[in-house]
Image 1 (cartoon, protein in one colour):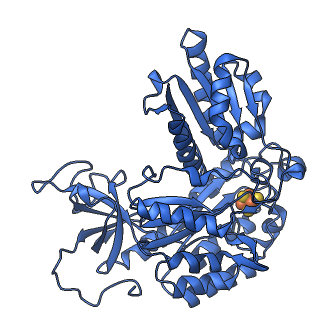
Image 2 (cartoon, protein in one colour):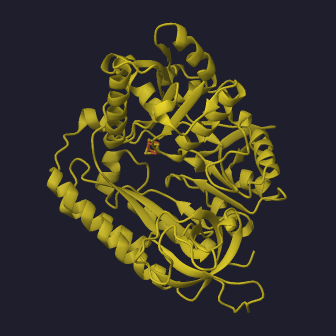
Image 3 (cartoon, rainbow, N blue to C red):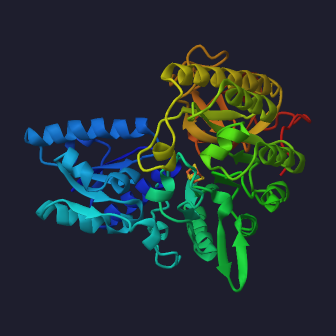
Length: 479
Ligand code: SF4
């Protein structure tokens, strides 16, 4: 049986799809990248934004139309949308055969098998209040993964917790992903060792609010900084990242770990969402603008060179011009490496959707979105240009999907030069994207690249060849 899995949304879903693949393969099913000839099509969905759900609805419409026209296919919906919409989704798209919530992934084989023979199968997580807090009963299937199949060469995601207890008023995650549950650190170490044995050198620890990681062990609380220390000791590992952080109650020991542990990369993804105290309060974010500024100052002071990425929502209910300008000012002050900027849209089931009127006109949201992006691009361009002449260590991801033909000094995208070089992309420790020409077999390797040019999104460089003089132009602390 051939199964096609399509993934929407965040890194958590990318990892869940990898885990689902491993489960299905071990049950003798084949994973295909051709949807049109698959026997089973699974959509691993995201509910965080309306736009993501709309995309899934249109995919489902097409699949169900094909099925109604005679195609024999099992259609399954996994992930947050399955949990949020439940049976309603089956009523809306009559061809759906199974729904599987994020915490029920371990049942996927059984669900597919049953769906072939009977009516639609529905496996949803219990409502939040009834969810088990015990970490031994949460169905983490991560240890079952196939370490040889990860999203990028030499890189793997490792889930260290799931769920969220923060309840930001606009967000559906605490309802669809359940309460925060941290994994046993011994299990995380075991999984990472297996990944290292399979050739992985960079892991990214995943959690909705990853700095909330806490596990009680032998009468002590193991926090994220403790976990980083244990992981840093593993031979064979070169880089450790963690995403995404929540600014409230951020333990400075994590920043010290980033400074002191050679493998922990100097990168924080730390969404502010707004620069205005009034809006932060309405969003139910449990920190003030001053708290956030202090955290950023501490990060720069403790860690030194650090890449900081942010998230912003524009047009939250009641956002005035003055509130919005506070976000503009926050970008200028923080000097994010990049920001993910979204226009507010009410999500059914959230407090904001119930309590607030979506009163910022679409045109104003659009204008604010563009303005914030423009300011972010100005900041990114200036800071990226300041890196010209520096040498950075890059973990190569593979052929560049980003660089365009007009990028100066580079071969056209996907083309080969006379020396059989292609345009490659990779990331620095600070998560800056770097493109340069090199042989394709560098994917998964670490190389030194001298930055020769920069755009707001990308650093452009040339690989330093072995034996070339290493000037004192290295950007990072020398690990
Ligand atoms: S911290 Fe807030 S925005 Fe992030 S997942 Fe939790 S509720 Fe959603």
